[in-house]
Length: 451
Image (cartoon, rainbow, N blue to C red):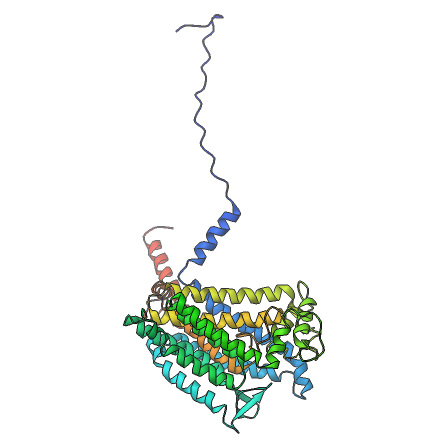
């Protein structure tokens, strides 16, 4: 072995090991986005969004109805909780309807389409009979049920159009008739115009706009060509312009778009302006639940059409954005159900219900914000009114049933183990309870010598 010049053995240098690449840094934003996407793509996401969103909107609506209606009730020499109790009763009945609709099979929903349509047309025609129909705020669209209970049949006309239209288009889809424009329009458009005519006889243009939106939603889902779609839209628009031009009240409402101060004359814009005042005084977190000033006689219809303004005043921007987020989630879930199904009836019905609720929410909130004319339509599931709440909750039950009926969602629900309802140590049709199975596994492990 050769040595160095100094006679010392050469120094052996350590072999350098290759440096392992550093793992990429865990980005919390990217991790959150990944988890959110995974949660968003789960089979039961639409089911939970529809169920949870509708329940939250209804419960928050009950709270705001109680807060916004107290002063109105006292001015009418009624108990402060008068309107809240009626709305709570309607919500309870609507909850039963929603549960029943969510458990009904699709065939039964289709079987109910024609009876509901016939009943809605009969009641809407009965409104125009003298001595039976009632006028509320200038619109003859109500039937008295005795005492303080009334019903508005035009609200059930929305549900009837959705179910009947979806069943009609589904049957024509199965027979491959939707490629012909005659089969796409007849009899959907004539029956829709019949409902619109019965509604406009009472002067309720707001509900007529919602039915028109449902009609266009069904035509769009059926794949109507652009020419046909534009043609029907042009006819409906021309009729709408004619009805607005011939009514001073509707022209006055149209003139109040963007108004910031009350005016003198026919278009005083009192309600629109005080709705803006209520939203402006709410700030970020509001003045507090029950502390609204505008509901003390300044804001008309504070617990019905303009309840969103009281919500903005008492709960602030945070409360209004929460309501908007719940409606956005509900609309997204409805679109997802309609887009993922292979059943044409489910697609048309889910799309029709989503169009109904979304369009009505946009029209109501747009009127409160001063961006649209005041149409007199309630905020779905939120405003006071049992006639509007009952068919809407039944329609929500439809969406829940459709969301549960997806193959992936059905499989996910079948894998869930019940937590309650069986005696300890006994097994039902789905087998023994989970903790009993785990206990047997643990005892088997101990008997084999494992600890």
